[in-house]
Image (cartoon, rainbow, N blue to C red):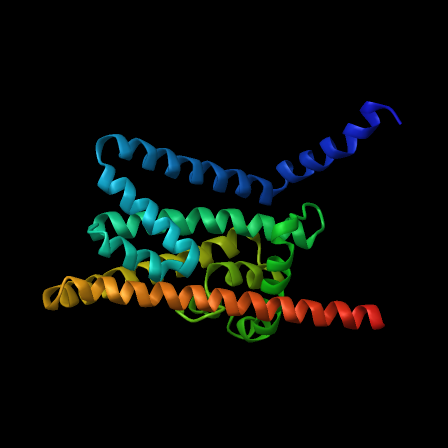
Length: 241
């Protein structure tokens, strides 16, 4: 087999990925994420405090979702005019990255090793809820994304939208609309809450943020152990079969 024959399948795969609608969505997500990081980098030159706050928000968001991210932004002293748009941008590029990666993984076009188990688990969770969401249609999917409960939110909404047969543009529009509505609700409610708590003591918001962060870490760890145990049980069952 010569070098051209070795390279051609890989090139064909990437052409398929980039040419698909999900490929264009993925490119858009990467571009938005890069633009956001470029903005944070430029902000660090003129306003280090703003850059630190945005980085802290983004990190907290990755660990505990939008609620923890928004809370971190307010504790960092950022205003709603910064916190809410920044959260919208972060959630948007996360959705634009997650949806196509899931679709490509589902179709076995692009399987990323470290994300494989996470994608499979997310699909199982979404599969268990898709019939309920299908019953209520698009409003049900939007409410599912909006509800601030564990195992809801944009990633699972993206998967359910795909599994019930919605087009990519419809799924993304519904998921992002529900996400933006949730961000606005979280943004203003948490702003009022933290302003009130800060009037009592400057340390109370920090303590609450620490508790939320601790709970998020514990939930992630317990969830990871539970997922690994479930995967091991399924592997053992498959081996026995």
